[in-house]
Length: 381
Image (cartoon, rainbow, N blue to C red; front, side, top):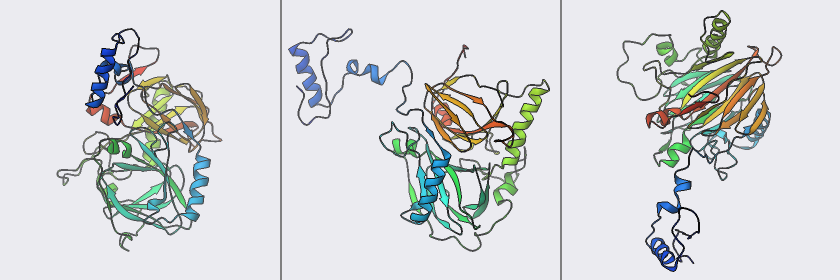
């Protein structure tokens, strides 16, 4: 029997490596329960497994369903306080209904109706926006209006005041990525409401934001820049530059000069122009292009990822799950689950003729703690 009122529950078991089950052992276990103690020999298989066993599972969300439900929410849910940005989070099916895509990463679709303003707030959680379709919304970060267009990646480090406004007559949807679950688990988060409305001076629609004019020049750092806060000072990474970088990698490979991570697989990482490090302290973001017919080798990594199909179509395999994925679909890759993708894209479903995958992960956290590990299937790496 166990000790009433104690959350600790210990059971003597007759198993190899365990002590003999005797009345004295049972008495010892009741004493542990009363004093809220847990002996490692009863828990080591769970606390110290041979390899990571994620609480998350591989899962895929269809963009057409997310977009349809977000549009319904646009008609029913206010964007202001209470609706708080009309953000709709992905809930991994094995995380108890929490709005977490993985144990460390949040992903959500956000939907803004024509002429709407999303009210200002700030939080310690690091965040980004990635646009898979549409344009016409500007995010305003610290008073700097930043245009959002298809393929643009817009990072925003924690504790920066930000709002959004839709300057067009059409609704627009995008995905948000944040480290909410990580900061929630570490009990480090702060949040603060800002203004309900932005000023007329901020409700502008410049072609380029101030951050782009200062920082958006390859290889060039403004001499005027002094000490910077964590996170990239560049608030928008334009699709035209990402697209060109990926296309050049595949062209160089075709010419026999390499440049890709593996045959038919081009990839770039978004980096902080001031430091060359990841754009955010806790989030890594990348874009991958897989040429038609190419297949990536399975790879396992500590830490988790969320992918969105930016363009094209293909088959993705995560662990023992395989899906056909098309533009906008999102899926999770839990820690140490093998991931591979095969491109089935063509000129009819992809501007580049390839499968383009946007990926964000918690890799910076694992690297900072020296817990990062990668295994390429079929190799010793």
